[in-house]
Image 1 (tube, chains in turn yellow, cyan):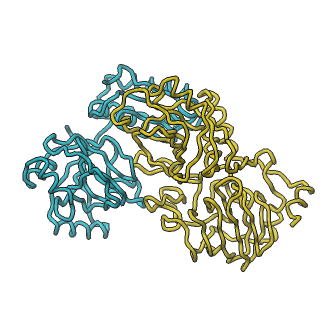
Image 2 (cartoon, helix red, strand yellow):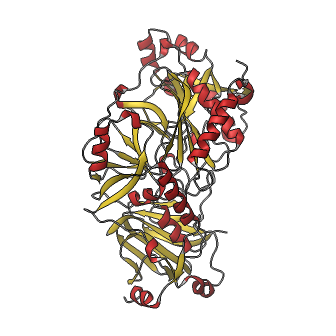
Length: 339
Length: 247
């Protein structure tokens, strides 16, 4: 069933439909795509009573406005921004009940970079290779494989059967306080955990010393393919033809060093293969953290062992599958609705 | 140089990188495909994806189900079991015929190839379509197929400035490699022709006509044939010629 839920008035500069990603096709050159910050994305679903795997709206940078077409429940997670419904302010990371004709207006991000909007029933777009995720470069998935534009209608898979009943189930839900990720501001420095990469041998101790002891800044030349960083350049010690290695698979989180020495962190829309040397790899839980670093935020790399990386990834995957939620305590409830 | 033993390395807590050599050669690439297809067939628990490349294979795994230590052991054992096994039975490469309209509007860089090689256009076409190529890997963009090796006489360098827009199905040469584009994208290969086939279709499973390790043969067609085949392809009435490769 396809139920119209929203009509877009102002989408923001790069807004797409995303889910957890498109797995199993990288040997055909198809990138995984999917939400940049998966933990935030999963909560946008859980807080409205959806499955963690449902599709949501991803708004990079904020600045989103839409009109509600049928009574439903939404949740806004991820980066911080002013959330208005008909001019009344609401908190993020909580369910919000909206009615037909309401206007949802989300401002530009103030902390963090990427916002997720979950809608009751899960967003309905044709599934391509088992996923709803948009990969704009090949026009795959989402709404016609592209970013959203004004007048686009967002459909959901099912309407709330009884909105009052559904609302009673979710209205007091919120993530456990310690789960809500920290959203960095410009000038902040975020620690990102990595393991050594595929081309460890191409870099000497001095290169790694610079890599681990410098603060790199996210540049505006960053998108869903990868965040380009600025900071002390890293020398490739081993002589490589044109600074390149033999093309290899480039999993999400790979940190490439191109000939100019400025690291690039690969994100979900990255090409499946590449020819730049990989100095290190960001562990999956910290890819969410990187995604929330807008241009101007600093990043410092911290090395962990493969065993630690596996342990942290295990915990993270458990979190994504079973995101803990709790009933909102009364004082928190009052605080959130104070305005 | 092909290593005596594949080098295996855990990366990031969810990937295993296996390198077989430090060269681009069909001989080494064959080893990648041997392990790729044997692991695919083994359906190892916790393995989410296997991504073969020129000289390496990358495994994406779920550390909740399998650890890199266990996976390393499984890979090593599978590798040992493969020694002395008749590989052609395992891989069963297919030979796929790709019709290509060469030159003209289909291959804007044909004049360059003719000039660079000092051959006539007919000779370039004969040489390019006269070989059976191996698919080293797919990558770069969805359905982009890397094939090798090209006859040295037509091994032209890439464009100095990549084109911003290349049509799907365009066939190009870059050094000793040839291949085709699966989707519209930018790119720097010298374009010599185009196939009317939908070599990549996101709504088909599998989306790509070609798999890693497959053999490919190009068949020259005329412009008229290009449009005729195109029509059949659009109606879903064109049958791609696939046979078992007996090399």
